[in-house]
Image 1 (spheres, rainbow, N blue to C red):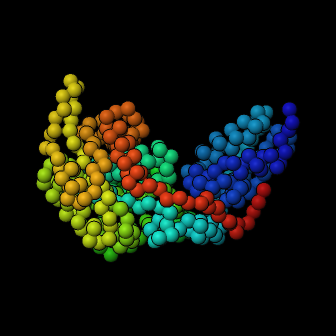
Image 2 (image 1 turned 90 degrees about the vertical axis):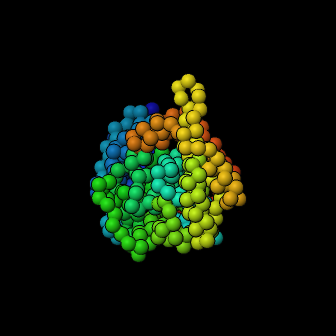
Image 3 (image 1 turned 60 degrees about the vertical axis):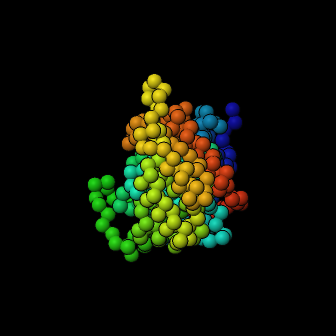
Length: 370
């Protein structure tokens, strides 16, 4: 069997993508040392930070990749850390080639706010499962948890590590194909966020402008309930973004949701559709019960002159999966609830199709090499 050449190993390493930055190792100039002596291969990878969560990934993936081509290879993986100057250069390059999703008419990302008039209607659960369903369908998806006081998205997706930071650029963690940013990733669940309007405004601006979203097909914004500062700030940052309103069948919930939708429209967001949550409950014997009334979603859609894109049944397993950090559309894809969310995601794609875009690459002025 032919022994590996240096060029062959370099090519194999170039096929490995960094799990956080989603670019090839060679493209990112992260391979800082490489020796190839027969079947003995040593690779040194420069991590963005010394204790990067990517370490276990590289310890597994690099040897597996090389041994797949050369089964007799003995592979050793070591690590170095980028300097602050290199991290800043990487940040600037990534920022230059990946404009913020709300960057106006040039943006290739469809920004969709998910809002409601009141809490407890399942808005965040809907946001998470729509995002997971869109990702499952092959779309690149970001999810911004803009519910600063009542953040719950990290728990629902099972994300607990803090985002990596390159210079002044936040690299969002990814789970189930969904990139996520939430204030909950920077604080513990027990700590209340006690911010007034200006601080909220600045935080949301940073989450939109200083995060490496990487130009996804869709960016979903999980808004807090009501018509307060956050909703108005979002409308200012992403004027013209679409809004999906979540309500329950109950008449009072529909009226409150209507006010939130009208507020969004007045501030520049565009009502695009309605999702009715907790529409009904089906017992073990197959009998359907409409526990919260009926027709609220259809009435709201009629008032807003938008389509009703989903009616989601009530199912205790939905909450159980959310508490475990596992979207039901992935963990129980054959369930009635998962089918309902998948249909809503399909309607959303038909209503707001992704924009065509060209593949982007970054060029890094980093030192080092192979």
